[in-house]
Length: 253
Image 1 (cartoon, rainbow, N blue to C red):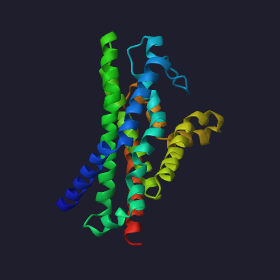
Image 2: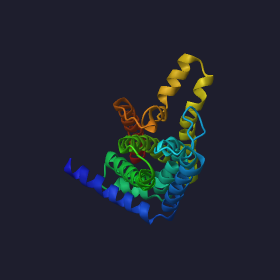
Image 3: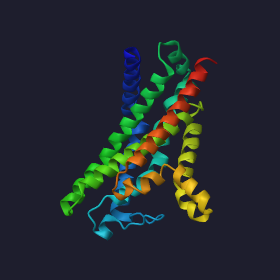
């Protein structure tokens, strides 16, 4: 157990450090922060059931707008951060080298997952903390709702990362990994917009299956609920399990 934790920590340090050495990862993160700030201050959220004015137009001391946009922003951000996690290893043949080392598939998968999740958590803090400070300086901001929204967004990100890493393990090209991941996350996001056109029973099933519904109905509105946390953790576990199966299958192929 101690040896596996040690290898997990090694993979984590390797992958987390690689994010800071990657010009593309840093560029995508900067673009993510700038777009989120622009949407918050100038556009608002005019999409779906949760329609909100921009900060300047509404004059409300709340970060609901940026939380409402995060799921859609994740559709582009998360595939960009995960597309090379396994695809690069396969293209360069370094995954075969990893398989010759005393590394379990579980340690490799978890190390990569926690590295991307930690990096994205840092990106979220870079986006949300400045907006919170600006908003609090101009009005009476409820930091409890900000904290709840951040935790909800963080676990939503974890669920999406686990799915994207699984898809990255299926491809040897970054572009294929990016497109498949963006397509899946985009479909999950758009499901919330389509439920009104579906029969009641099917609409409820589709709505419950979408991780974004478990964010929009609670954390995006400033309310953190345990049932949504359990859902996201369960989806995370499923994605990581599938990822480990793919990696383990290539180890013995």
